Image (tube, rainbow, N blue to C red; front, top):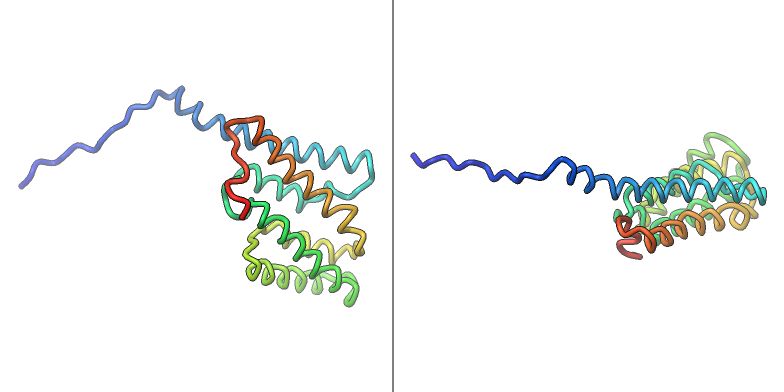
Length: 171
């Protein structure tokens, strides 16, 4: 019988471990807070409907998991385009309805999978677009400004805070 080897133990001072975790957490918190405050400010000052739960959720995804595929601009933007492209015609044809909103959400998810754009908050947006029957102007008065704010905030914060890296890849 051979001798039993002791497992390798690496000693990391508690303070250093906290600093390693703290920097990315503060970077993520900064991105989220900045994006959500900008969404609120734009809504308050312009009346544009950019302070909406799907966009807040997108800001959280981009802030918390900036290197994950759902946070990439190539997922965020096409996913919301799919949501609007599906939900607006469904609302125009069926009118606002929970059942039509469920259908719009499901069709959006299918299209997102086909596009390789896995950004779940856009599914919520599809249901909200259909249920609220916002009309085609929504694309210009809420969707595009909100995407510019969410993705733009992450890009700007990534230039200022070394602990936050966005995007890991555009695709």
